[in-house]
Image (cartoon, rainbow, N blue to C red; front, side, top):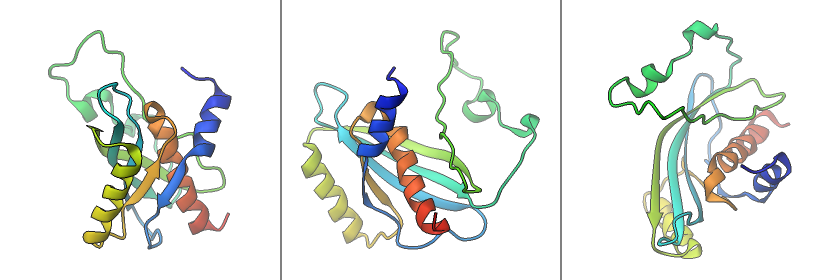
Length: 162
């Protein structure tokens, strides 16, 4: 595990290549993203993470008993007892009244180098006339959630003019 200053450096060095071209509206909003970084597996050059973030621009307070449990999210069948769990959370967005949830995460290990894969992803988005998917380049694929947090912060700063 890295220390806090190294994690801040990952946040700082994250490159937001493309953001959605529309604003966050009242109610829940979906922010799809593609996060690319140098491969974390030795036999692949690039790691690609695709996912969706659901953002609510309204301040929501929920009692703890309304939060989903591990079983609610992942089910109880075939759970390895040795597995303690994994948390994908965001550090928080000061002065921005939002709630964020991550969903639909897909991780791929790609044989092409990072620059080539980035160009392929951008070409794909353009061919599909996709104006909603963000594209992010992370300096460390193992800690891609930090780069996704930077993506969300960038959008929120634009929306809330902070």
